[in-house]
Image (cartoon, rainbow, N blue to C red):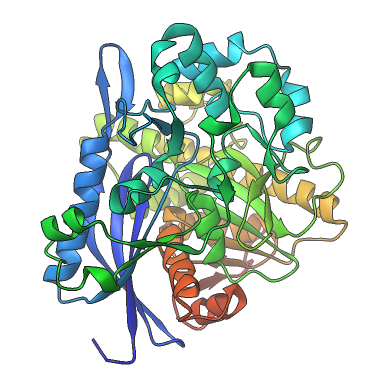
Length: 476
């Protein structure tokens, strides 16, 4: 490594997998390299779906060792993850049990048992009310396993658990707090009304902090296990945006009239602002936390989880699971086989249950569909759903969207990117694909003082060459 560069290690944990990227900057350019990748930490036991804390912490330490073995001199470490899930810490700071996964049905039971009306919660929090919110998970625990929350001194979100493991400090940042269903945008803190009506103690949640702060050095025992004892005083742990959506947004060089979409298993679509727009909740959007006082007005859409399920279903009939290139070839072939199929309603819950190919054919009946036409129908449905949301964003901002900034794994699907540009009639600017990890790294560099601010960081990304522009070609 050049002596005038700084390298950080960005841990990005998704619900399906995780990765560690070593990201180096000289203040003007970025160079990122994946040093480690991890499978999902979710497991099933006793009829419950949980997240293995041991595997989470082992993955972090393996990532540190891999970076060290690759010759990187790490200046800092940061972690982001999916939202809503959390662990309980006791008064001594020990994790009481493995965290539950939001995929466990207990959150649905908590939502059903909660005495607070969804419409009231939406107004109080200015956020989307989802049955997986932390609030409903805690409600379920207090009803079904009251001894666990009774022992807890703090709850800590998944990215916060990584920071706690590395430093011994328990913190929650604004971006993670906004996924809990307990945070008031107006008060810029925990909602007193929600806490009072549910009887939850404020001390359980702790103080909400701003991302970008240096928490401190690695714990000596962690540094020793990772072979970093000689340089551990020089390795800072930075509390980046704990929610991966907020990290990803930091890596997108957005203009004032742009919208963004983080394209993954779920598509998070929205825009960045400093003030909440009137009518946000009525249009189905909510306010998520951003960096440095920014607000991300977002909506969750069913995303590439449908494409993955369709690929798996086609694999059973074709004998091999098709990749993105083959799916695109099939969709193009579907265009040549008679009238275009109607776009799927991608909100149909049947697409997430049972055989998705059968569900697509039922939705498109009575027109018979072959495999290629089914693939095309799904692509059309995904793009149509995005188009509908961009119309709503235009209404909320009282001006049209000039470009769609795309981050996440969906940027690798060239056919999807071009279909979006064709249907939307605006440029689709795709990249970086590892937007969450890159945004994580940028916030570390800002925290270290290597990069001045987010505007400067985004300028570096814009010049990095990692963004591919797709322009409208053929109207769909």
